[in-house]
Length: 450
Image (cartoon, rainbow, N blue to C red; front, side, top):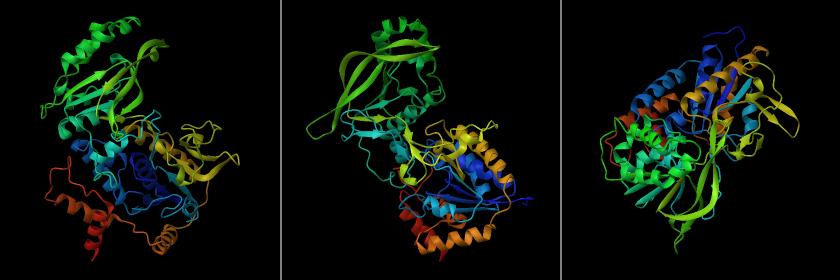
């Protein structure tokens, strides 16, 4: 793989967006050094997709293995970037690469912002997804759910969490709390097949009866909407628990209700109505409140980037260049920007959720990475060849050794993969076996090196 004007590019993060960047740039003949916080590559593809989706996960993993085993791709797992981490942003920039691309996702979670959100039994959806995907730090953490769980939201993340609660935790009741109505539900109908065998049809019909006047008020045909909802409950996966699943529509959580031990006992919910908003609808509070009993609450309220990384940051996001360039895709959307100086960070680019938190899943992230690779490619074409890969890699190895960091390479990943495939297993995980802690993985990799 050679190029007339080849460069070294450092990629921070190995999720779908970053791997798309690495694939394009390495095919163009550039050397790509991947620094990844997790030991394993994949990011959202490894720790965000429901673990029982073997075909999707397997296909992505195969692509990523092919990528990181290319001779001009150099993988360093277990290397965190940020203030107080293995390397700072400035140390990465000083290694001598021609460009640095951050595809580190959105590691933070937005504040829930309701009274009682620190109570026992209140969880962020992302933390729960990390738990059942066994991300180190989450996989072995207890998530006590009780009997009745309220999941806030009506998208695919809500369905994945309901899937876990119904088919694996086997709680008694799961209720999706939805700010708008049934017509505005956002989940993919194919996803609902994982849980539709457990739908409480009678309860759903009663819920439609309760809200029907508010649906009619915006011109919705209640019977048609109900039929459309129930028609999606086909090809359901076989029932494995007696969990009942239902919906609470036109409902905005306003307060977490707790018992004397600061444990969730319910939600205070405000009734909503729908108002037209262009071709869509908006939920408007009616100042009417009621108590909804439950034992746990899971909020899917979106994510924010990690402000401790050391990149220019504002309002939950890393800052990108506000001055459009007119290119397609527009370079400015992917350029890190320092508002204090009014200048672009010349060699720093952002992609995926690092650029736009919570924007789509694997396919959208990959497309964003493809666009970023075009932008970086244009940038590299204007630069004379920089440091050789060996020089940059030697510097990196020296710094990590001095800092007593423990980077994991492709050989270490292969040893880990073999150990996990050969593991006898157990009943506390879904899909393929995964070690739940970094220490377990690092110990096993170290034994494989001896």
